[in-house]
Image (tube, rainbow, N blue to C red):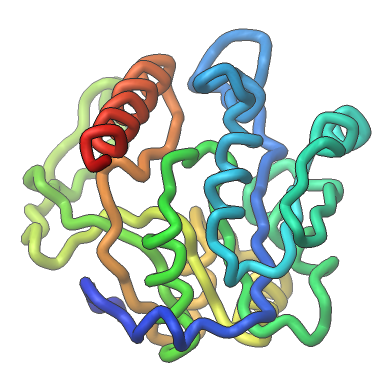
Amino acid sequence: MTALRGNGPEKNDIMPGIVAILPAAGFGTRMGGESPKQFRLLDGVPVLLFTLRRLAACSAITEFLIAAREDEIEPLKVRLAGEHLGRPLRVVGGGDSRQESVAKALARTPEDAELILVHDAVRPLVTRDQCERVIAEARARRAAILGIPAMDTVKEVKRASLPGDVALITATIPRERVVLAQTPQVFEAALLREAFARATADGFTASDEAGLVERLGYDVYVVLGSERNMKITRPGDFELAEFYLRQERAHAVGAH
């Protein structure tokens, strides 16, 4: 069950004990090129590092865990050694899927962690305000994610026995019932651990952490995000991210 909420509890309700997990073990096959997308440069900085710095602007986060491919752990540790976040930062081994990477990182989180925040390593334009609002909502309601309303008409389709670029429409889903999920996704630590344990036991996979929690019957709330909090997936996404970044900086200069 989801409910879109524009405003959560006040920022001063945010408490410590929040571990951020960044799954960064993917190959980024849709992006093309030799380098995984999380290591390609955005504004002269690897996307993963750019994302990490944006998350670090949220002082409520008390620790960072990056789940990387085994052969990238040591080089990544060297690259991150110069970062001074003022909080612990660890690089751990990830898996072949996002779910496996998050599960491995989750197993390395402190037992007394209050909340677990999961954020896409290739969603670099997240803001401190977005992090604080979704954290506050999760503290109040146990589970919350960022999301944006669907602007386009959404169709349900089936593809069986059809060419790869053709599908048959089976239903039209009212837009008011649809949101596009983003990250961060934030959960009470015990709740997320239960969801992953059950998924492992049942052999169940989901495309995000909210899907694992939802299947247990728990409510997950949606805090209003932004289209600028985009996930870099295709080559053209880098150009759009650079454009948003230039706009952001121009607005900041104009505000002064």
